[in-house]
Image 1 (cartoon, rainbow, N blue to C red):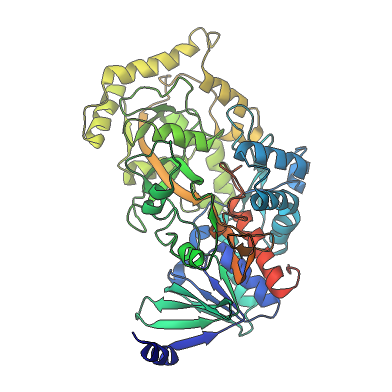
Image 2 (image 1 turned 90 degrees about the horizontal axis):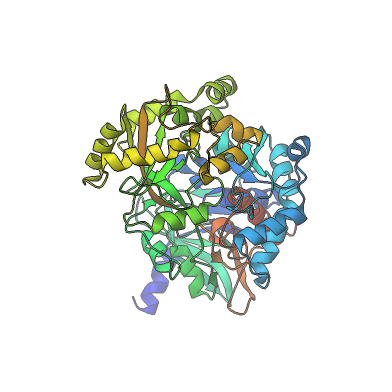
Length: 549
């Protein structure tokens, strides 16, 4: 189109104006919009998804948060501090102290997660379960040196709905929500950002969104397998198949629009994936997977039914390492071998969808399932998930494993020998135990919340423990740990680390701050707080005001 024709098209294009344009309707975008509205600004939020899915993946997340120095930790006599948390963070994430902006954000997180996340959420009516979980301890104690994982009562769905309710309460006629709109260009004027152009994906019409400030809250890049494969760390094994635990809309397209304006994308190869996914029985999009929280007491096997070793794979210590081990296997799937006794006590799925007792705040039923076993979930998996196999014998289980995989890889004799070798540890009442998985389980059970959800070590083929269960799992993509480089005001930086006038990045789009605040590993539960902290910083910078509870 020639210049005159394009000018005419732009003049007839539908236009909207605001003080702030937020691109993305996840938690980070919602909190940014909320705080800007409270500061008296006019806000447009443009989101690719439907009104029912406003809130993004936070609607479906579990709601765990790594928080430092909380009253709940104090009641449990957990001696946490920002200094201790930062030491754990740097060591486990392998954060480079010279990496200025990620370091600034890591320090900000550990210093401000208590007042700006924990206390801020309490002021909004949110509550936490009265237990602090101990996750990502590190294989050799180099992770969380003490428990920090707090769980929102009502799950992340309650958190997200609470923030949406606060957003609507703060509206005052100054909020415009545009659902099913895709940003296709960032506009500039006189050397600064001036808004964006978007496509209404219902009508196909283009709309011009004018604002002197644009906040990118568009999520990461891990919803696109093409992007994941492009940025996969050099030298690390890449599995032939992966499931998607992010969302196809988190495809990096808005990152590329920012890069065209000079923005820096850093640490794109650092990812927070999970090692034990299986296809969602009612997928929300192609390739949609669920992430199982692997049972500590299950044996993790290769495609032939042999135990992966020599160091056994056990969850709760180093998720990044688990993913590397799984990715290095000969086939893109592995197996969890367990029994009914283990499954009803330990099996869980990440997210709000399959944690209905917490999500719906059914306290008595939650306590009952914790005490007596979650038979309901296991029966549901048995009915709905083809990868969840149950049989009274190991030989029968081997037959089902081969039928599912479409191969004869699993020899029933090998599967039997694998179980026998593990059970031999319990001969003579356990006096001959010499297995690292058992040692890790006993260590985990010393902490009360883990004891509630982890079986006492026992033979896999113990009397009354059956039937046997095999779960076929594979690597599932999840979070981007890298992203747009930002300063402590959430301003997007260019190649010279100078702010791009009018452009901000929050949440996963900014690698949860600085373009990679977590480093190579997360202490787990750093993502929801990272969304809140980066959003608050952006709103403070834009409005010149403190956030308001």
